Image 1 (cartoon, one colour):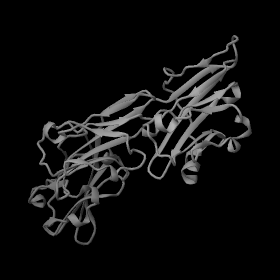
Image 2 (cartoon, helix red, strand yellow):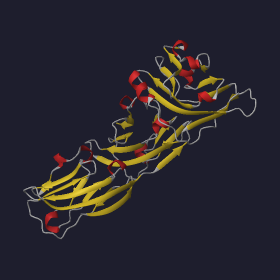
Image 3 (tube, helix red, strand yellow):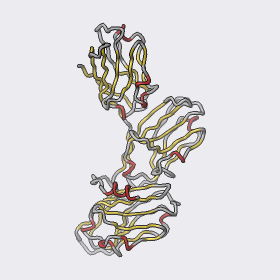
Image 4 (cartoon, helix red, strand yellow):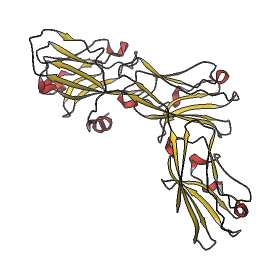
Length: 362
């Protein structure tokens, strides 16, 4: 079984997965293309394509040549390949009895452009530009790759915020006249480590056919705060959009699942904080209005070193951010509040198991 490699950039109009044979194939042979996840890419049988057998994400995006059994050219054209579809694509030819007559593997590599930003920036742009002229009735959709979560939907000439996943509500923006200019880029406000994903921009026709597709990978550097013992206080930063709903719950947890600070139903809940943090934490009184959900920890010690997660939840929104705090042994006496505005840098945090706990308890 031979293996061939094909590499393309995300956003190309199409890619061809080559498969040719000099073997004379019977007219009743079945040609089947599958990917490494066992998803059916394309099926040819009884002299015609069988689109009803395709996995849903390939519908309308594949094409094989006419008279393929006579010519032996079983190559497959895949429109708008994405990172989700990379890997081994296998072409298998079966006889009427189900015996394998031929098999070939094509390794598809899709290169995805990457955007990298520091945690704490006000916004980041996910680029997606095209020279294709689209009709006015198309739908432009940004979503998480491999998930159904939608970041942004543009349809019928306007944004459709009600279709967004609540994690992204109020945090995305697209340009005006995007169909005229071909600039389908998305602005994402206040990116955090939770946004470290691959996103896909897809353009659909009114009939639901894919007219364009492109991936963008977002890399958000981890936020790290470092201080020495002896400082008066340290702030763990988290900024998001302002004017948050009044029913928002804001919880800060540490990596030992201990409640650092809790804000719920319009007020702090010190009685629910872990004993280790009692009387040592503080958040701003107008946090929901300004979107500044930072927490201040007073008299930090080496025992405060670890990973902290802020989880924000209401009926309409959901936010989350991870901050790594390192408190070093004192080298000199200090009496100051540490300003962490420029202290977000890249590290390798240990993901909090508490995240699942938070989600399930919200």
